[in-house]
Length: 480
Image (tube, rainbow, N blue to C red; front, side, top):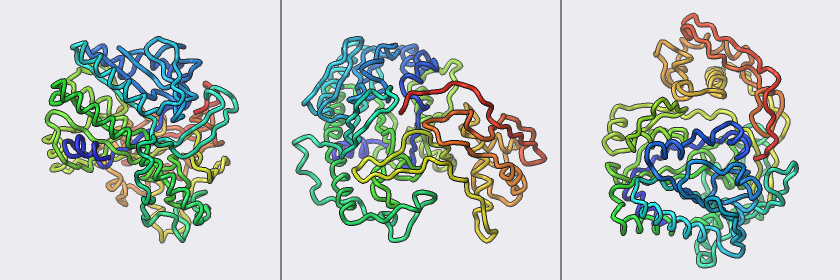
């Protein structure tokens, strides 16, 4: 992506350890039923005096049937992609403001999106107010044909390689998936069902190379879109006073650990995603390995824009983005961690050679020998999962404070000290983390022990109480 390199990597800071998070189960209907339509980022930004604009994908299960039930709040102007056409490269449907959905059958999805993005930028500039514009293309997602909207009880899906636009079909003809050490290994890797995957044969590897090339080709219109937006900002004399955040909503694996194309595993290929920031005071051509996540973006936007949160509480926290802030954080050796918790939801391969993870719960591993480091590590990870799977606010950003209120433990490395063995083993011996059934989403009644928020001294004589999730609560039938 040469324009991303020219405009963003060379002129901004690349956060090499940025991680995505999965949204709540249920898509747009769940978002509405939980009351978030009145309390999320665009609403807050409008309250702070910003005009807000959005084009592209907003939610899964945001459809041609429910787009106005109700309309998403908080946007000065919008043009949303709608299911079941969100990932159909040559048959997309957009819905502008409060107008009827419009089909763009036969037109290339990212080119349609680009024109809408340029139009929204023009509107934002003409309004002569501070603005927040989000552009969310669906590429390089696999091409998906749906027979329904996602609200159907038994939706049918057909996954295929991304479809490139005609002008880019000649590119990357000899490119292959990087043959890293974990690519289609001779010996099984990973754990659980991944470890049982067969090695891919030449036919499958060749198809996955084609799938990879298709993704690269589908990225090129996005690269052109970046150039178009940055060029227009420069022409409007706004580039020096605009912050640009470039990221994604998930990573991807193709062939690593013998996996077919997909994105629903806990490996770095899937969860470690790009984040590049350019703007006033941001270092140019810089890289940092400070750990950040998508949950940190909203508070970071507030910090960058100088907006008072006015009592708003976030599950993430603002991270440094200016050159001075980043260098100070690196010099002070500030440590932040991202802990992968539970993944609930649809998970399948997106190529033609599918894999099907088991739907029967697999027992969480227990250490079998004291000669392995696992007996030390697993109880720590188990305790973190117990705490974080239902965390809110400060518990999410500073879990060790709730496990060790004395403040002596701030990182997993510190928690691995032998002096904490008894504390973590007590939690682990209670079989603290588990679930009774594989569901399509997180449902409390199927969860095992839950963290009750109790703390009275942490490992120094503390009492950690565990309790089973009670039956009841809301059932979510919407599938994502």
